[in-house]
Length: 415
Ligand code: AMP
Image (cartoon, rainbow, N blue to C red; front, side, top):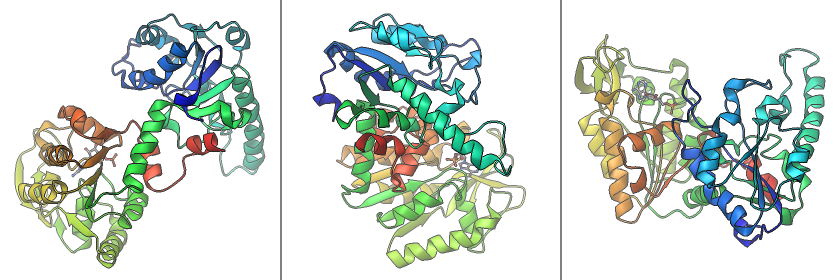
């Protein structure tokens, strides 16, 4: 079933959204992107004449009630965004009556799902090493099913529009789908768009395909790098991992960030790229700083010849040019992770060069997907988010999808 094909008239729809929005110390929203992201789905249901039961997590309350993470703080913002009143259910597992009383066009917002440990389904207060852990886990899985069943009992139809948590098998993101038949569960518009964007990258590849992986460490990106190796023509590895590679090739990297236990892995990646005919592009020069600070003194030096007391903090001019040369002619582009310590304004040039090259390629017809928290922050910082094809809202979910893993949140709808 798809959301466009479903008529929600007189139906109660329970919708999992990602309203895990950042709040300031007074509980005011500082960035409402996630609320805006869910609006097309929520508005379609109301416009059809359905009623809405909205559910989400916020923060990490670890299975306990904690007012700091109460969704009551954003009730008025949700009402304003939807242009209608919102009723608040202060206990998500005891909202049967409030749900039953909903009339078409009305909206009920459930309190934070993660106030219940059943949402995540992980046993609390017991370590993995404890001999009783397995039994506790089994018991919690049963409780999770009951919790999901309770949520399901509120509604006629289930919609999942929370891409950010699609890689988790939680009560509200996956288990709940077991209590709806195939014709009464579906992905929301945001999820559909995200899944389509990943599909464009993985199965509808126009060549050349250039992937840019940055960020601080190679270890957190290895799964995706290995998966991409079978698909891309050009693979740029940048950011902090540059120096693990430089050291693996015998270079001198001064005080640069480096994973010394990943030198073999770096050599393996280089060998694999060669064997598969992938053009691996690594930085040859860098902007080094004499301290990890925006005000550090800087100099341009080879990435494999950095003096002690200095660390590589951004891509150098020669490197930026080399990156642009394989990005601009590309027809499919994936970018995850910055090329430098972009949080410091003096070390943004590498990431900016990547973003600008992606924009140029997109203008020439390339499909470009930017995803993962920091690269999204980068394109936002440069004001270029609207100039790439797609900016993903998912961090972990996007990476797992691109690694080729099936997302539980998507799989549960298809069952
Ligand atoms: P990740 O969470 O692995 O995607 O890494 C993102 C972080 O990598 C950002 O906070 C960047 O500041 C950091 N980063 C990028 N390049 C470097 C570098 N050369 N040295 C240290 N940190 C870096």
